[in-house]
Length: 383
Ligand SMILES: Nc1ncnc2c1ncn2[C@@H]1O[C@H](COP(=O)(O)OP(=O)(O)OP(=O)(O)O)[C@@H](O)[C@H]1O
Ligand SMILES: CC(C)(CO)[C@@H](O)C(=O)[O-]
Ligand code: BAL
Image (cartoon, rainbow, N blue to C red; front, side, top):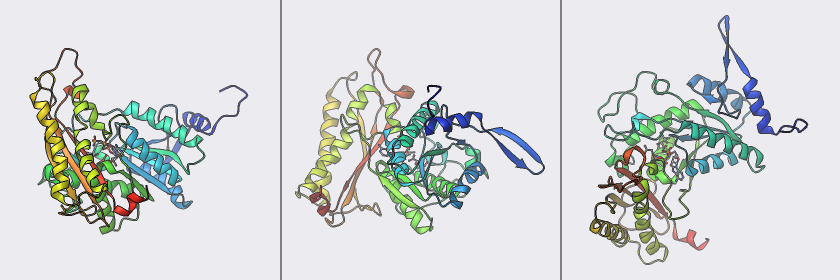
């Protein structure tokens, strides 16, 4: 910034942040504590439930809207799209970054889950500057909430087992099928942590990605049934423009060879979607048959390749379900639509070529999910 130039809004905020210390009155003692901010920005990093409540209070008093974007970090363009949507519609956006152990099964990837705090901080700070400069937004990134498990589970972490005792939110049957069948504690963990986040932040609106479509159905049901005063907003799945792979933090585990084949799920779902869109089929057998044929074709081709070339995978499920309940349907009601979804497990590379990138963490088995919404038929004619 030239000495004579007036500072931009974000520069002013950053200057203030680096020089600001906040006084907290604790009884008769006053402590002086530096406010933690994201590097090169004024965005406060809130580490405790109390600090979020303190941050939230003035926005409630001034009736400013707050949008919450819950994440597990390892941010990518899918998360950024949620934050952009939240900034368009709210005076303040708070992003939570917390890898919630309660939603991981014991044999899942909690320990290796990518943690990229520094890169995430840069993404958020850069995005905030961009949002602040773009006149089309109501808000920008006003705070990041990055708690510890001690903060989120004040009575002690209850454990990851199906029979763990503790305070949980369980949403059934929507949380028992599909992802819930493969990951029996997953939606209990998600619903519980989201309920905690909603109670801490008291957001006007919460933002979730369609990529985790069953998660959105679980959250919507929770908000309805437990009368949570927030609006659930679901944003479209962000995909790699090159081949349509749904962006996901876990894609880093794939490495080069498996990354190429990982699009098989999307291609399978797209084959079924095409039949529905063209009015050729509405029944389960035909739609899922088309999807399974694509997956089986790719699997067969791969299995014929030598070990140092192939990428093997298993199909966990391919489903045609009701968008609200996630219960399987035999026929798509063209006035209502349905959800085509699936999960595959990319198996580890059997024999790596020299210098081959096998993926983050040595390329473990990776479970990928994806879905396509079959919209009510009248909505396609508007496109
Ligand atoms: N490609 C995407 N497009 C839109 N939203 C997404 C996308 N990927 C994730 N999200 C959303 O971002 C939010 C936070 O998700 P999360 O931090 O678990 O990232 P993720 O990429 O889904 O990670 P994982 O690989 O563990 O599933 C969720 O609401 C999720 O649906
Ligand atoms: C919603 C969420 C942040 C809860 O931990 C997680 O399930 C996710 O990232 O989708
Ligand atoms: N986005 C879903 C988080 C999980 O798989 O744990």
